[in-house]
Length: 139
Image (tube, rainbow, N blue to C red; front, side, top):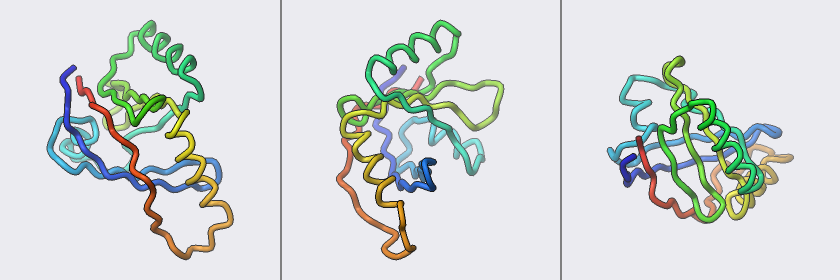
């Protein structure tokens, strides 16, 4: 893969236990987010499966490699925040993400879920501490 300086704005929300992410690429650097839009797609770009430990993420990565899945994009949002998007050639547009949801990333996801509980519709935009995006690699 090639390193990419992809930048993305992220809005997070929860409906019960379902997390909804709205992603907006902020530059033209190579990424599967940009590829999705450039192909004329709208809507659901990925579905994610969260791993709660680094060991679970390692096991999932080994399993998808064993099954022959190719990684289209990978990166990290801080320590224990790895993510990969798998190539899904048979389905135009939507891809599968494996996400290491532990450490600071898990704490952020918990805060978003807690904020959604009992939300009355007021104050919909709440700025949170930015997660550092480490280098992203696009294949």
